[in-house]
Length: 266
Image (cartoon, rainbow, N blue to C red; front, top):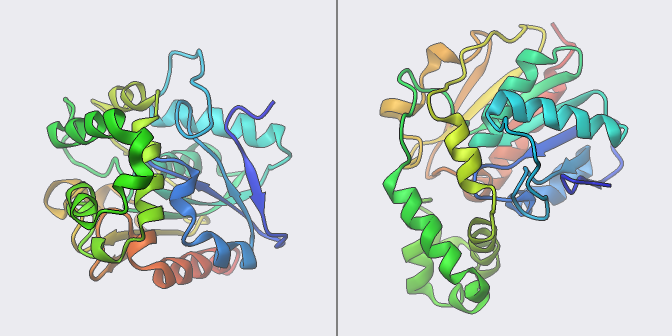
């Protein structure tokens, strides 16, 4: 069994595990995957109730609990020591993994990670809830809909200042992932009232990447540096929104490679 749809690409010596965000899927890494798979053994997975992963029976779905689920499934796949890259909720889970399993996690690249807010979220975001509703109603038609530029603008203008450069295929995959995510609200509700506030060993290199135009996790209230590891590198990419791995492919790849290469050099 492979409940998290774990897939391996490339045959590099170092293992890099990628964790997508809420309402997304492993396809979120498609633009950076070719280059990362040339440098590492690149591992993708789907969170419970997302992509091709089934919803698990466990009641606990907060980021800390998800980190334990991921470790268990990675161990079953023979993956015991690894570097991490995570986007949004996936970035938060990556930080939780590093804090809880310092014997397993070698480095973390957080791409617009969630959880770095001083005041924990207490309710669902209305705009995201509307986006989820629309995606759920239309995702079976995502491929033809994504061919229409005005509809791509409607769906992705707030996601990225570079939405016009997104291919119809990228937009369709994102819409299908959002619309078909049966675990969307269970994972969302599980992080309400929580934030990331744990310590990560300084032996684990950490890079935090945010876009300068992140409307989902804006700098004003969702990018609190005091909650990030004191030793982390904090990078802000220009002309980039909540998915820098789509907006600034080369920069995200370069920052990830640099973070991985930093391990063990202290």
